[in-house]
Length: 461
Image (cartoon, rainbow, N blue to C red; front, side, top):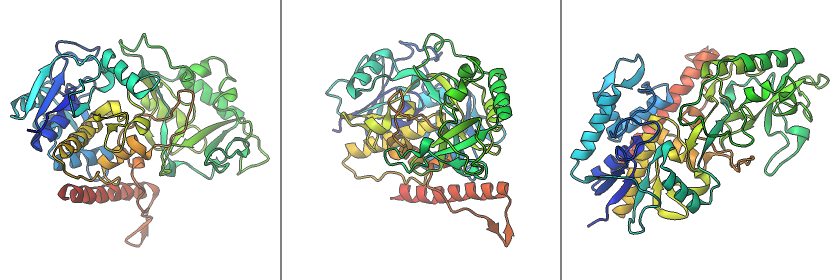
């Protein structure tokens, strides 16, 4: 008889992984410490409990990356998407659910499955050595004992801290008639060209207004369990730096020294915002040093005052919050296995994805990969042109491995088209030149059409 697959954590990822593996014919032991051991955020012992919003975001599979992920999961027989459909509540174009009914439905389905055994209780430390196949899907609130054991095994300095995230922008929405490529002092770093940053210049007047907007902007507060966790050294929010004095940013992340505006060489910028390539595809750029607690709408308003970013589209906005995630590009292989101990596979938010749907999607992939491995079947990975493949590629190899004071610039990410290989731009349709907004619509449709075709072929194979 096949050894059971042990899955630790019955959140979105663990629940989906268990369903996928069991439906492939693999016996599963699903471990959940709640309600015997609680967390700071959960209030029940139900599986797939939604601790924040009850929304799975857009359900548009033809123009939206998360809607595309919904579509792919449905095609793959996702339990999470099935229960979301059963317990949907009105939310316009979004998919939202009755959170209690949704969790109860997931719990009942998993407990009723003949190949799934539920084991209550905490796994305090690494799983026993005689568990030959394990998926760890414990999310951002991983128990301290397990987090400490993972940290010791991987050699990483830390797993839990205030995760400092700078906004990430789609490269094609940056106005290069204003911005320019240049590294400070034209220095060529390892693998660099001397033109590795996009630079956005500011006059003194623009800088003064920008600093005031940062200070006055509406900020988010910390959740109760985050309040006692200190900022990570070197990751102060941009608005906190601005509050330390009007010139602080000019001598920090916005210093103009060593940069010459290629569009106006004789005009010295008073300050400069730099953006650094964030993925190997070159489709995403992050705002260097711009981690922030500004509310999302406020970030869009403030950061679009930066010259060159007036029409910026954000792949993700900035934030600081307590999180637990692996430096996946370093410690996981392309099948989500821990390099230091391949019997351990990871899924969900702990791998470096953000969002309910993204977490469940990585659970879906982990469950399928673990089942195929247990049955001795060769299985290909989903293409990078699909939502599942793009996320998997980001967390296991698509990210550029630059270093900072924390040792890595890898950050969790929601699914977005910036993670996909680019599609050809559609500038003309039916003999008519498309406006910028129309081009964006056609581009999103092209991403979704390609992904749906490739995902269907992958499932069939």
